[in-house]
Picture 1 (cartoon, rainbow, N blue to C red):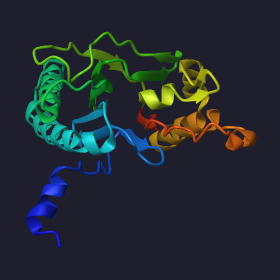
Picture 2: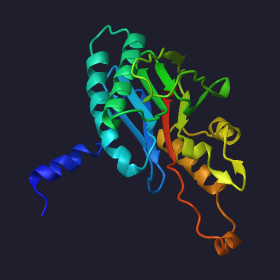
Picture 3: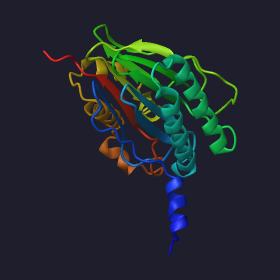
Picture 4: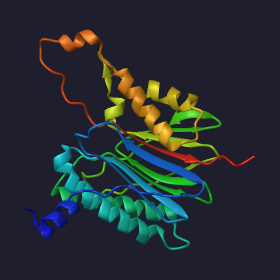
Amino acid sequence: MKSSQEDAAAVDRTPRRMELPGLQGVDLHAEYHSVRTGGDFFDAVDLGSHVIFLLTDIAGTKEATQPIAAEVQRIFRGSATELLGPAGTNVMDATAQLAQAVNHALIRAAKGVRFSPTFLGCYDVSLGVLAYVNAGGLTAVFHDAEGARILPSESAPLGLFTHLTHEPVMQAFEPGAKLLLVTKGVMETQHGRTHFGVERLIPLLDETQTQSATEICRAALKAAEEFKRVPWYRGLNPFGPRRDDEDLTALALVRHAKAG
């Protein structure tokens, strides 16, 4: 039988579930699709005035990356509260410091270099403004009255260099504006030799009418899953089974539309 110490150690090696009940003025949701096999991980902290969230794709198997994600979560939650909790905080500076803290946690927990494309965002609830770092190019699609478009990313991934700094970018959210993030597994979902790609993700967000972050995530994951659906006769392939797919993960943030 396992001892209480062994049970506690097992908990420490596993990230806690993200829980954000009753957010005001904004809807945030993240979702994995089906069984996870890799290192996709998301988390968020609600500070009332700000909502801070993280989506990362840590290189490696689920078993290898879970202890790393657990340590990253511990540092992320503690540092987010410390850096962005006080009133009057410079959000851009604090977001940059938070990215550095997460980067150091990744390298320390992995005991060396660990390629980890990461999107880190700090959303100001009262102003409707997002300060973010997209380190490593996770696909981020933003939609407002001007339509859907990709948010730029020029930062190197986290988990590679201890002294690397990241400059946050600011994006204003008008009422009803939406952000959709997906990991590499979604973008590289294949049908034959064709990848799912941004040419399918952008129209999906552009055409959706929902203001639900949950429904947006599920629509993106469903579209990727249906895109790769294999014809019935491929099941008779004599050359062996299909390889395991990568994680499919989506995160959506929606600013509530004004009533009336």
